[in-house]
Image 1 (cartoon, rainbow, N blue to C red):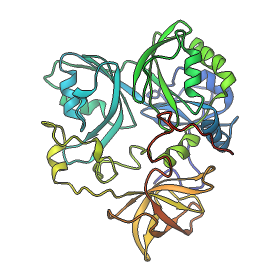
Image 2 (image 1 turned 135 degrees about the vertical axis):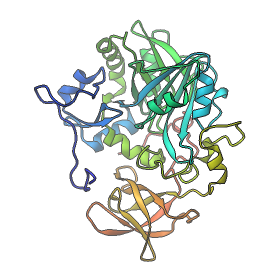
Image 3 (image 1 turned 90 degrees about the horizontal axis):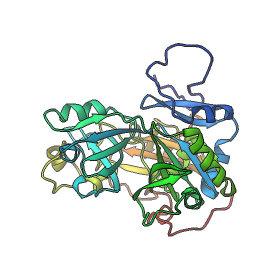
Amino acid sequence: MSSSDGKTRDLVATIPGAGWDFSLSRHPYHEIERPLGPHYCVYNRRLMACCFDHLSTEDGYWRLRQKAAVLNTGEFPLQFKGPDAERLLDKLFTKDITKVKPGRCGYGLACYEDGGLLVDGILLRLESDLFWYAQADGDFYSWARAHGAGMDVEISDPKVFVSQVQGPNALKILEAASDNGMPDPFGYFAMARVSFGGQKVVITRTGYTNELGWEYYTEPQHDADALWAHLSSVGADYGIELFGLDSMHIRRIEAGILNAGSDFDHTTTPYDVGLGKFVDEDKADFIGKKALQKAPRGNRLRGIRCEAEPHIGGEVTLDGKTAGRVTAGAISPYLRHGVGIALMNQAGLAENTAVEIRCIDGELHTGSLLELPFYDREAEIPRGKRIDIPTR
């Protein structure tokens, strides 16, 4: 049974005592979050804050849209090192990762042999034979180990944790926090090593919001308390604040950013969910290539809008018949209506097609299908080409 009925959900709390949390990991900023009243989900066996008692979901959303918000994520970086690291990763991912040069990063999408999606994430190439793959929630480590058998590559957990700084003031905070100023160049999907208060840190021009932003990678040798003290101090004038996944969830729906395991899974191909552009069909080989060559090319994933909040797992009906299901839903404070993502049973349904959508009140509400994202379809905001700040 799903843990969420649209009215309640189950999250992780911090309580005294020892017990059955042996396989769970806290990120290095856990004690900094604790006084703020965090409520966690489990993601890659790591705790990630969904919300905080000190900040409402709507307030967090507007902090992200108007100033700067920080999420300490549950993304799980895996390290690939050795002469065959590139060869293995090129086999695992649908994109030609040989084109990712040292000091850059790219989007990595992995499939099963039948073309079904396994996981996605950000691939960083730190050196010619050294990569980090910051994966979404999914079973990738054992998959990579199995397919790397016989290759000269070491796959390991470098104990690295990823945090996101997102919002219109994000790059101002980066410039203020960097001991040597803004890295140059630092364009979209760039990677750099910077000094924050004397500590060398890997950063990337990426994020899960399609706002202006960047991510930083906290490694075991870092003094995490000092690192956060430095970032929060220089960011205070720019409105920096910790926020939870619930607030980010709204923005990622608006932006059409997909969540592994809900918006796509092993039953969907990249083409089914609009990720076909990340499949390099002319690559010599990769896992799932033969199946994808025969797969339908139509995109079945659509944005949905209605007045109420769509219920995840609820049906989308067309002419009185079930035509799809909701994979994500929220109320957008900016658009002032319900927004969501739906996986339809067929591709090719036109924008503004009238449908009925099951919402969290249990009722079917009149709505419509939309192309994703809901706005900023040229991704001008994260590229720094659109700088208007929305009014609450």
